[in-house]
Image (tube, rainbow, N blue to C red; front, side, top):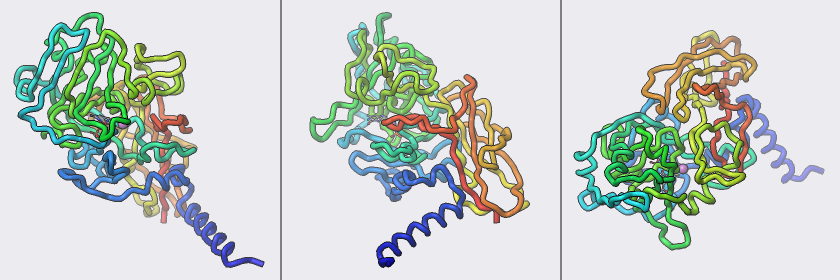
Length: 402
Ligand SMILES: Nc1nc2c(c(=O)[nH]1)N[C@H]1C(S)=C(S)[C@@H](COP(=O)(O)O)O[C@H]1N2
Ligand SMILES: [Mo]
């Protein structure tokens, strides 16, 4: 005999199966996507609505429609903090302390000095959380269940970190440059968020202390009055509300370097190395992997048969430069080269388009894959790792031709 309970169960399963086959089976329509999709729109003071992943500390992601712009609007730029005590900074009294055991001078810089005593520098760069798309990981992994919006692209203006370090008399034996911000853990159980980068990356002319974001002061939640910008590298190094910069003759010891934000060596096709923090088996995360996002059409869209469609999206990488975008409209059997749009610099999102005309009514999968100047291409299978970093697996958009 069939009980009411098993009937309900069977019906629910039947519905799930029906819904799945209706849209075709997108890789992102699997169970873990439920976690990534379960977010409410919410507005932090001074921002417009974002997808809330957690409230304390604040972790909010950019809703997908804002990636139709190559520059992500400041008020929609994602927000990620590890610690829950985030002070309001008074720009008049804020000071940036620069020193360290590998510097010959101690500096206390005001915001005015940063703006007027140094040559300004400007560039467009993607700020992407190491855990962007973690919520799509299959199998599921713990951590903030980000969808595809823990990233943004902005025009950063500030001072080259190397110019500030030169004024502090940085010595040749500097191994790393470390940063601290003004945020604190409410209880002392969470280690202070302190990060470092190798001396060579700190001295790179593209690494900035930025006080402007796309023509405006940094929003409070994105690090007002100044943050570190490490173009090409994942955002964990982009210290917000930066208050201390130290040149170190020894590798930094910090939970956030020695334990978190690490991955097995050789697992990912990264080129940049962070030798002073490498162990025999693991390395800190470094540059962003080549990746792309389809912004048009959206998953589940209905397209008219025999009517031309423009597939559009973004591609980016760790600064080698995007060289190619390929699009498949048949679930990955055949690939065609799309067209790359405006180049705002090698650290920026690169827009792309691809035009095609759908045939007869059916369900169809649209996929995109980017390649960069190093010859690296997005993988067709997720490179699984327990912290859920570097998710750049080829995305699948299910559309219905009807
Ligand atoms: N002071 C401070 N800076 C920080 C963090 C933080 O927790 N505290 N998180 C880092 C991480 S992991 C990310 S992904 C980016 C997020 O930058 P956003 O909030 O401007 O998007 O900030 C980085 N800088
Ligand atoms: Mo992050």
